Length: 335
Image (cartoon, rainbow, N blue to C red; front, side, top):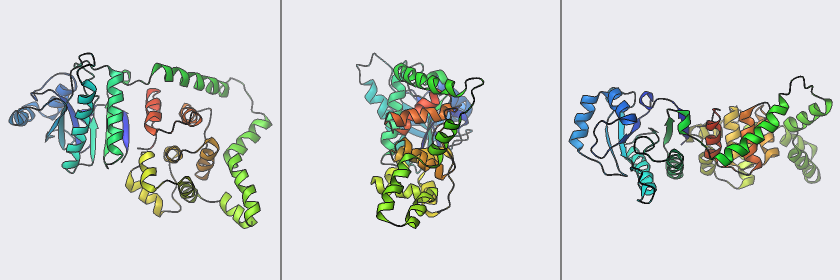
């Protein structure tokens, strides 16, 4: 099931459960904890928490959602930052894992987290972010659950300075060139675009190989195949199974089943790119797959440039790509 990083107010999330960054006494605190108590109805929520009494660091308990849109509240206790030498990382990871395991035990299908321990508990935000993303993605490798990481303030979520600098240089180089005032497209530009969109080099070479192996009808059939047929051909050629693909693409299992059964399925651009990432397609193969759905990658789009940058770098971790997109205030892939 998909993992999404979004900006917003966790108390307004319409999911099966939201996670409260709780304290061990399960009492109403400040920050996210206080906001959740107030939105849920502090008197009723505190009464149920008092009946539970306490929760250890790294563990989670569950209560009703009361006045929230979410049906339940999972209270997960993260560690107080003490310099990193007191098992903080292990305890923070455990808090996320405990909350997700509890959601599964309760039969819940969707859950929304804040960035636990990153407020008054003082956990460095970049480190808290890393633990959160790794814990969630590790859990979803084996489990089906829709997970949101809800960031209230854009400044609370950042990729590394080194990667941001590299990515900024890449975007500036191509994005600015594409938007130079008064720049006119040349004939060679148009030819190059047609080749990239309609006939990537990889496809041309495949066609030549087919010429040796089969008939003209075989060549035309492959070049004109629709998105779904091309997608499942790539899955077979790359040696992946369906579960690998929809999990790596951050795609819901039900949506994947729909695509599998509908030969005329028309994906969104985000979904098509997500499949290209999951299949670890090179740039020509990615353009080929996108073209089957009527899309391409453009240097006039920062979103497209972020995707292209990661493909060229052979980085096919969709969650890292989404972190970069989120950092640049761009929409994220699939999910």
